[in-house]
View 1: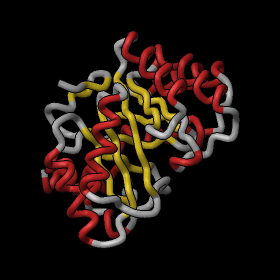
View 2 (view 1 turned 45 degrees about the vertical axis):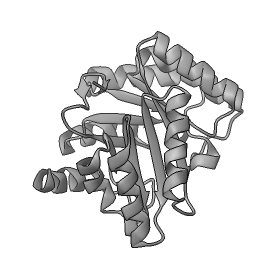
View 3 (view 1 turned 90 degrees about the vertical axis):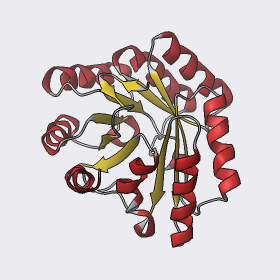
Length: 234
C-alpha cells in the first residue's frame, strides 16, 4: 500500500495540483477543483530560504490541509532553481519533517539524492524519484531501465515523464505503465500525450499532475479538466 499523507493511492490515482505561484490562493482553488495532493514547486515560487518555506507550509496546513509533496526542481529536469546545488538540497532536507513526500530527480548528484532519500525514509515520508525528457520518448527497454534505477535508488514511486512525438510513443509509455512491477507515475508530455494524463491511471499510474490555471508542463490539463474527465472514465 502506498500512501501520501492521508491519500491512499492503492484505492485510486490521486490528482496532484502543481503550486507554482501565489501559493495560498492556488492551493485553495486546487482544493475547490478537487485536488487530492499539492506539489509545492519551491523552484517556481522563488523561495530561497527555509524560514519562508516553513511559513508557507504552516499556512497551507492550517488553511487548506491537503498532503504536500516538496519539489525543488533541477533546471535539467525542467526546473527554475537558480541557486547552488547545496542550497537546493539543504532547503529540501530542512522542510522534509513538515511535508508528506519529496520529489528528487534521478539526475541529481548521487550524494544529494542519497541524503534526501535517507532522511525521508527515516522520517517515514514517501519518496518520488523522477526523470523528465522534454525531447523524446525513449524505447520501451530504456523506460523500464529508468524505472528500475529509480526504485533501486530508493524511490517509493518512480515518476517518468517524456515528450510524445508520435502516437506510438504514448502507446509504448502506457505499455510500460501496465507492465510496471512497482509503483509508478507515468506521463506523456505534449499535445500528442495529453490524453495519457487522464487514462494512464487506468493502466496503473498512481499520480496525475494538473495545473491551477496556466500549465507548467507541456500538455498539462487543469485540475478541473482532469477530475471531470477521470470521473467519466474511471
